[in-house]
Length: 413
Image (cartoon, rainbow, N blue to C red):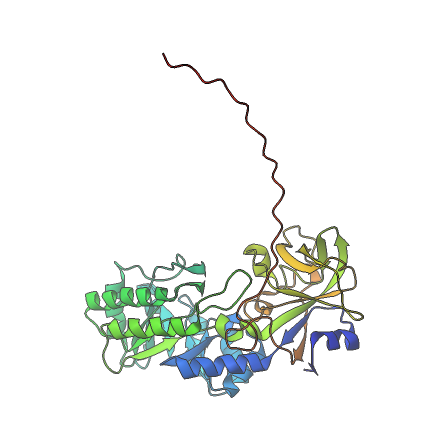
């Protein structure tokens, strides 16, 4: 992987025809060290956020050797690039073959589930093993998250006690509770509230948990979304853990994904055509810009042009991706100099989480090059850049007020 001082240096040297993932391993390293210094427990990286080998290696080199995996390919990825790492298979629904391979071939001992049927499947696929760490996934409220994850996974409160008791009886090792407050959680107290729900479930079941896994949801900075300081989230978790009905040896786990990698990558896309305020790029919703399409997040952007920098005023644009599907549309607004046009490049920031991880091969597109850059991300919760992203505002349209016709007052009788 070649290293450039900045995206402009890359453009000047290569004029790339394919989108380029611009990666910043130092940003991953800093985030990894922050979580290890501030979170009072084990930090497991949620591989689904960005499964790039360079991310796995950077995390392992900076002390994070625990990984939350959701599939056998993710297990194989971690085994290859972080040998000896501890993995937790935290997808609540898994195939028997994946469970068996994880246990017997890769030494995975931690499994999540939210039904009695999945627990029975895990026990059967591991040959009734007694050395399992069994994590009951609880359904919790997700107030304050930009991506609520309730509905698909998690045992409801009225069914949780029986499942917790069954898990306790099924293993001689660790039994724990896990939950997810929702991705890009903007309310730190959501963790404390979820831990209170978990504590009530344990009390009703009459069991103690060996592990409390608060999951992911830790946020990053995006335009229009400046979350509270990450220390506020840690404080909320500390308060919630102190109030839980757990014993002195209970372990605390978390599974950050976005917060570890969001700042670490951006994507350099080429403008293939301009139609008015619409820019047609060589990357889009079937590539790295899924969230820009389906969640309509206006990611920060910069014009990257080989030549004199633009001095034109900023104007809001919308993007179209390279496929022939009309849903491949990102409404933005994305603020760029008004003279942007075909042949220019646009750097789209804060795509380290759920950017390259979401790419497909639809219509023959989807291939990205990868290059390391040494400049700062567009925003940072760790001090590498400002904590907020300034965005211009659309000027309010001139409103013409029409005077209402006066009616004659009716005389009271």
